Image (cartoon, rainbow, N blue to C red; front, side, top):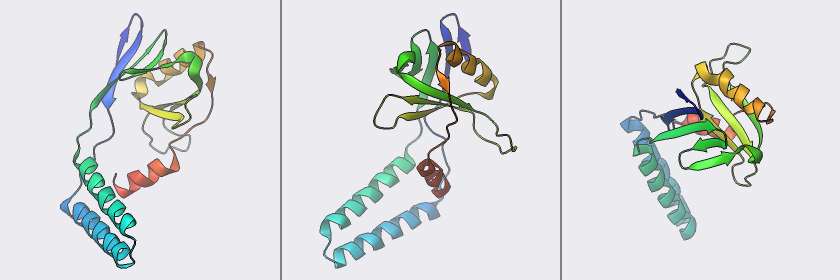
Length: 161
């Protein structure tokens, strides 16, 4: 992370890359094939097509390498790639660091925006800068509230996605 005159800038991978074995892909193929065949046997052709299409998309996304995304905090707001979240549109924030019970957690800046679809956004940060980012958000009169990763994200991470 580099501190600039106009704010903070850093970059991080789009998501944490996971090494998947051939067994993972075989399991995906078997699950998709058997569930698709079952749907087909029960004359639910649309669901069978949907299952196969979903399996193919999962395979494609599992093979995809994460992109490097640039982030920044400046006088206007939080920049994520080409998108900017203006401070006046951010309802609340939370800087996640190691929890009080000693459980190791990834340092993440969570913001709650005015967006209807996916209102809570998690941005990876470096733990060294967590206090500085927190101070910047508080100086912009943004409310600090407890937030965490959505349960669906934890489930997907457990399943290897």
